[in-house]
Image: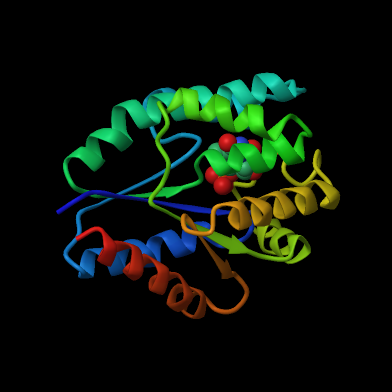
Length: 210
Ligand code: TMP
């Protein structure tokens, strides 16, 4: 069976982690071996990078932040993602290069094309077979996030709603530019309702890769 690379994207509070859990269970029911992972922090080096980028008190310059995410991605793809795909497994990943384009490109107002190119260099050009964009109104996402104990110090304090709006708009533009790779899923509603919306593009992609 050929491997498949599925990424989940969306603003903070869009429910990616919940949906990743439900989708992993569904994929395993279909008989697939699933490697569930995330960025930043999917490798030992990545855990260190995640700590640096998200929990360093004080300012991480936008370009330094972009490079740290790209370094995390390079290590992750080389040591975990590509080997799993080569074994024919399904890699189900919370965030990938589109996060950098949306957050560092649009959110931090760096050049989105350069950010994408940096990630493509870091990963030797690896793109997902399917990217599920969980689209949510940023205010609703922030409300969901506010209850989370693991929210990094800076998420709700350093970045305002306009940052989240830019991130959302950038995601939607990416989806429009690559409609065959992206499936945009409305992220409001119960976890089971959203899961039902997520499954159909996943099933369609897997059918094309048999
Ligand atoms: P999460 O793991 O809870 O989704 O949090 C990851 C945070 O890191 C989220 O606020 C988005 C941010 N991020 C970027 O800014 N750029 C990136 O490339 C990635 C992978 C994450």
